[in-house]
Length: 412
Image (tube, rainbow, N blue to C red; front, side):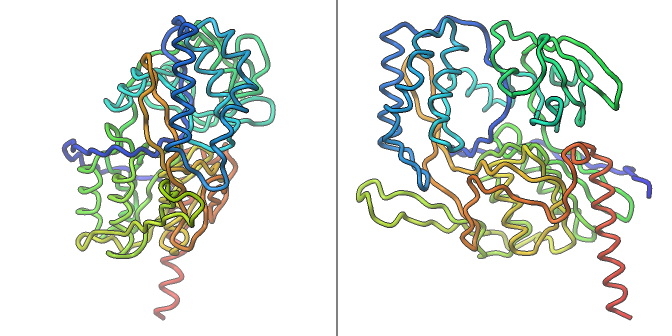
């Protein structure tokens, strides 16, 4: 079976705005080896974190009042930090003690770039693997792409040491990484440097053989998610033989963008997911539950649907995949996600820092909690096969062919 990509269409760029973020965990190095905050500034930042966690943070079965305990465990490293990078790393290690996603400290500058559709980092999505770190995705135009790294490559050494932990790509103050990796069993070496690059955008829509439409959705972030591309897809997909939505290494994004996409595939009025929030004014009571529903009465797509997922499909991407799977609306193909699914908000901290903290929990319409509960594909592939776009598209095309054959037999 051969892939055909003979037609594409390019809609104009749209604008989307929303404040409440569902930000997936993405590997990106800090900006420079700047100085850490002084002792007074450091204590002001830590005190504000405690206040925000106490007043605003919420996740099921998580006690955010234990911040002082977690802080005490890591205070030595925080006070010894000799750069902004080391300070951020140490504080984030303390925050990670809560054992939930979407709680981290960052700089205002990094958050500003994110809103504008750019970031500073490496542009790779690695995962632990036997004998190294396997790359699941490389962002086009990123430093990793320019170096020649690709999905499915295995990083074996980082700065002369065996590649065993994701943290090895975070701790280098110089932001330069000497890598050894294997690409299709061929050994390669190169130097990867943290730098600024444009975040991946969706589209264009590709039309494959049998009139199958393919669209990659790299993120639900404002500045990345494009309503016009999605609107054009469903305007043209009425007679499509099937639709493939590629959410591999989609780290999440804004709920409004998630709902925009889901409403093309789930009937108007049906539940998309449940948002669970603590009643801050009456603690101890049953949390408040808000049902988010589909709100679209036109261009509803009812044809065959495949969603591609992988290890770094997170947050909004996981909600999208899990809900469509639960409704039997889509076949999921790829490898399991991680279960990093909490609605969060960004809060100001003193001295140019910001805190991302979870403010709610999410469940599917049937009540399945997604945080720490990975979404599993209906058709599972190894992470290395999932990283190969042609393998994934062929798997989807074969699924559509089986569906057509079954429909043909039923009609006889």
